[in-house]
Image 1 (cartoon, rainbow, N blue to C red):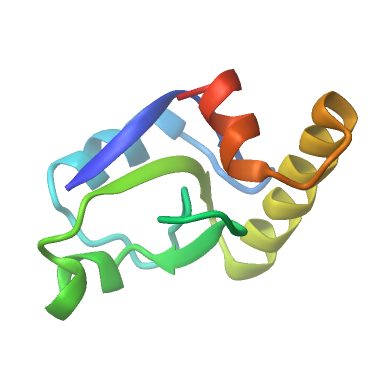
Image 2: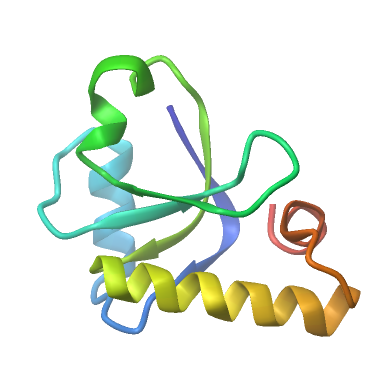
Length: 104
């Protein structure tokens, strides 16, 4: 199940954010959409293509989505932006704590 944070980070290549979120919530498969999810433990963000989240071992897992991107490159740029914001606000690399305090 996908749980979307209130103030998502959105990649520069993403158009129609609300349409993408509705489609992901409805379980539709989007060809070029990646999601950034909160790590389960202390660590960095995880990037998944949305098709992987609907298959196999991922199907029964809950994901806290903190960002959406239109390509893998866009997703990597988004991770860099989140990391930069985290360091600017916390002066450390604890992305999970930063995102929990800021947007989730």
